[in-house]
Length: 200
Image (cartoon, rainbow, N blue to C red):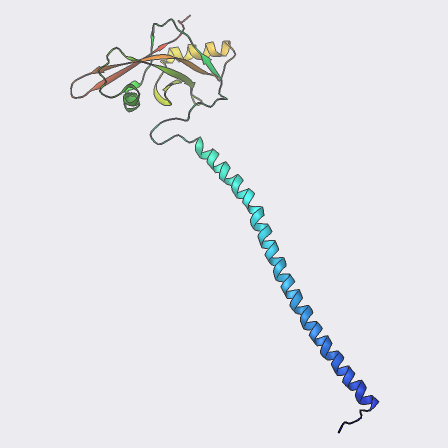
């Protein structure tokens, strides 16, 4: 048998339903807010990761470029850059100018010349004259390896003539002849002579 509700009871029932609905809405809003916050944090994390990639790439390139200029442990020096000024020096094919200090670079000369080669006539190669930065010496390189230096008097004149020609920091390129003399107990003596213009 149904009971008739009074107006006051109707109001109480409606109020209870209203608060139940508000409670459900609040729970939904809180859940949606938490989900949105998690998505926002994930978006920030992804943005930071992608923003860091270009910086990591730049640092990698910088480190690679820095390491590229470091000489190898074997003594081989950095190859000549295409941007380095180079002056071609032409002699008369007489190879009149001997360099000094070749005994210190015997291992490099053996690789260049060819250890045990029977060719006593010598081997002609391209040489590069490099101005030392810390003193007045002039270094002689063949195939990227130091093989000796110009004598002090020749180095001084070479620097003066470069300056007179407006090539203060230039490298010189010329032909060189490597000769070898074999002695007792596998002794090998190398000599390097340069084909340079005659002295003044």
